[in-house]
Image (cartoon, rainbow, N blue to C red; front, side, top):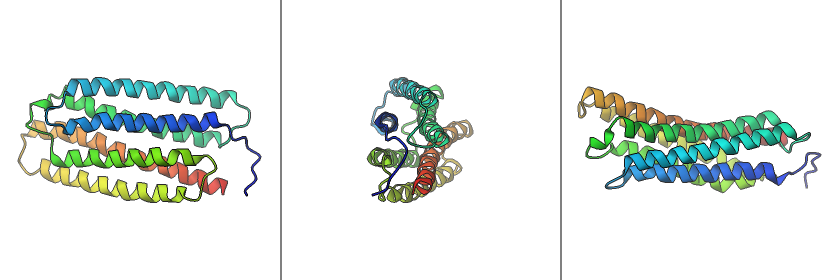
Length: 209
């Protein structure tokens, strides 16, 4: 059994678990963009609320870190992890907001490849919720987390590249291409942010092992 001089304060880990739950909730709302008749405005508004909830959660974590003498993880790592988790929701909320603001609801449907990006995000969110509770104690199975995160990020990259192929195929008018690409860029950034979370977790694992 590994001995540690650091306190195992469950409150810190609860913050990360709650953030993972918020992210999965946000991705679930984002996934409604693929419904037959999505309410783009409502989706955007609900994601603003989720993103706001996570901002408050992040601020509470920072306050606790700043007011705690000895923390269970390196302070810098906790700041980085919380920031990367927050980045995911920022990009997800931005993607849905752009769909609404750009009036992309006028299209018959969003590109299939964009829905595939969202599907990858949903898989990443499920993985995050599964593994965040294992952060405490850094179980050896955490290694599976960043391996699978990397695989899913590659899937997201492929979906993004195929989206670009479709956007530049001449199927859409030039202005619509620009709007859709901005949305796709935000979804790609969200996918990358999931991998950034796994990189922080891997760094913590290496330090603590």
